[in-house]
Length: 107
Image 1 (cartoon, rainbow, N blue to C red):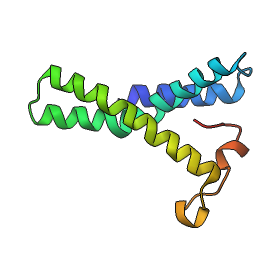
Image 2: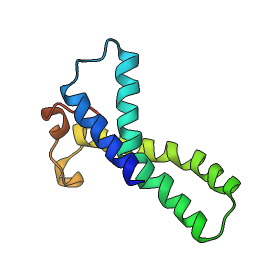
Image 3: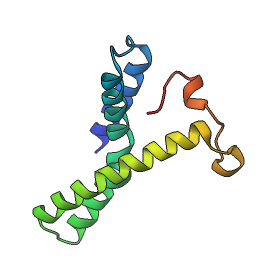
Image 4: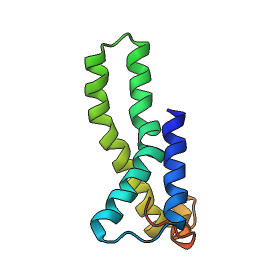
């Protein structure tokens, strides 16, 4: 799990200094890779997998849960990113546009 979070952090930093993606499709793919590895896996997929393992769940169950919960983690991170751009700081507790000012985009 920590290796994938480190990978996500690396991809995030790399996206800040690399050339801009050639097209929108590549930009979306790049942003989704960052959010998947930097946030979605450790916030939903792995906690569910760890719970499954602790409950002595089968590999088949763990795989099915992973398929269900990784998209949920991605959706959570996308919503968090949108709130970071458009949210009310008095509600979210974070400044609006912080990621954009740092050149990170929505990821």
